[in-house]
Image 1 (cartoon, rainbow, N blue to C red):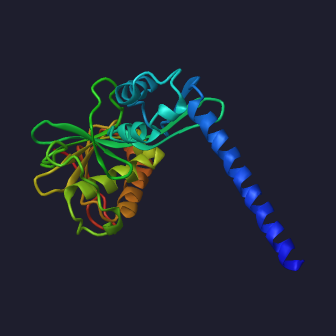
Image 2 (tube, rainbow, N blue to C red):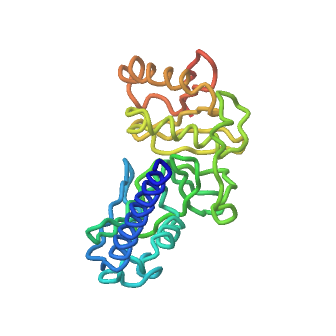
Length: 267
């Protein structure tokens, strides 16, 4: 009798599993054939200017999968759409998925340019918040801090460049000029006063940095991108306690390269 009941239990469980499998298969088949009713594209720009639009994403999707509206969801390759969008240089993250109501969702996070660089060959490109190089968007240029001067790095020659953020420390021994530029630009962009005041970074032949401010007829000699806290603290104190009293055009050069000193001169 006990053996008979065990067999009955096994049969019941087998039937339940079979029924569930049939139900899941039916739901999947229904989802597979359900038409795409609409496409919803959302882009997170963070604090950056717009470099990629919904129209751009729609164009990429059209080239990859054709017109998706009205097409059965099962015939839409979300993976290929996602890969095509991810190859766009201004895209940091992308997710493509669908729901049971027939909506195809495309969620994009745009990269955030930090600095616009103009190298010695007049090639212009961006350095973004993650430390990656990006091409300039000629249709939608971002308003950014600019770096120029003796810069040999090139986006065309090294589009896959990535600043090694993990190796950065408060030292002059950076792995490249680009790493120093990244650290300096990030520092300036995250300080409200410096972001409003510093307009340009000039790289000298010695790979040192000079800063061109928006207010005041002077150049700030920064040196390397080490000890930035100390250097900019001295500069801000000098601005408030010095130039506010004697005038912002009193000096042509403000040198903050050396520890515990601010050296000013006229040219």
